[in-house]
Image (cartoon, rainbow, N blue to C red):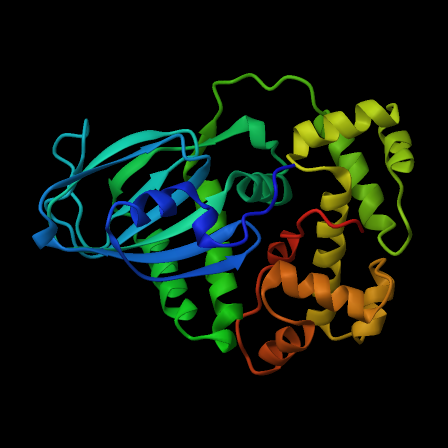
Length: 315
């Protein structure tokens, strides 16, 4: 599995803009495979052509101000402007004419992260879905989620929970509204019934140590073929996926307030509270204590899927 993209500079389109003289106003990592950046391009720079070629990650762009004369080559009659959105899939090509003052935000999404969301939210293999390439669309609901993310991210550490919630809403919207069936026929991988059987078994045994051989037996496959087919279907190795399920369960327990941190760690198969705290922080951007404090203070809880950004550490 490719490593988690930890910061904005690891995304290809971020690098392209940085090397094109567009001014970076601010940027921040939002968690596993997510980052945000705000850019500003000045009219006095003259007309500029920029291109993105198979960036390898997805990008959601929202124009915040200006850009009414900016356009994408090959898309006649479509122009930018405040509130307009572009969805740029990982496998897309595009050329852009910029000749206006324009302020815009980008949300960068790794292919691995979007693939995990497809599995967790819709029980769909990442290979079965493709993000649609969309240029200067009007989508009030998606734009509102972007503005919420933009505002929350400026609030500092105390607003991380709200920023994570907004990012989760965006991911859900993209998967629910802006994906289509892939034209590529998925080959190999686990059958849907086997995926569900393995998922149900893992969820029923999260407090126990789980082995690859054990999960392979549940799937009625050899260990070698199970590991290969699992990764083909889920876009990540079994240990990373199990870790995501453990963190999701821990977050649900902490939100319910039925156990303390040590109890959640034990119920979810972590060695101790310190181990859970470290992985929880890396996956969500907040500590378990900050998460519970935000819930007590009435902040909107992050959806369970936020803890499914678990990386590749062993459960």
